[in-house]
Length: 155
Image 1 (cartoon, rainbow, N blue to C red):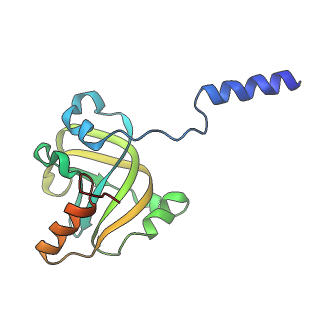
Image 2: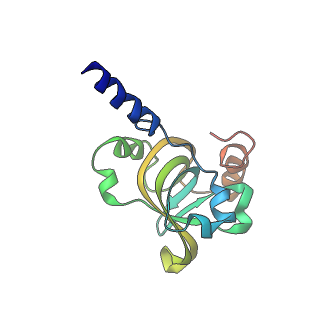
Image 3: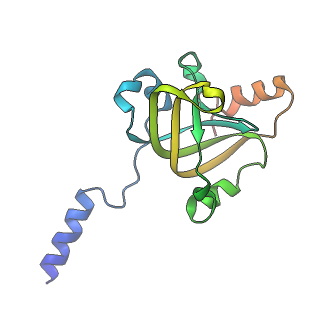
């Protein structure tokens, strides 16, 4: 019996059960969208959100575009994702966040179909505030240069 339990535990460990997935660099998704289209990924990047915008991006690949980050309302209800989402500024802000979800390319997504990519979150974690609210563009730009994905010292 002990041998069976030990063997079962070994199989679970070797299959990756309980292992945290290593995030894919966000810019890797945008540089190779066909490789990741329709696939579940885990990424850490910057999320700027507010009224009618939900931009997911990294300063290192802004030339490739931004993704629309869709956070389904059921993630806000209960569990670890809800706890992480409660840590973001209300209404609008800029945060660095880890997202596990399905990446999509080859279409038009988000508000007014203005985004070439979309990431539909299934789980969010590790929120770090870059800037609360929206306001002065110079202040936003300075905060992004310092702490956003691809910045000098990302949070």
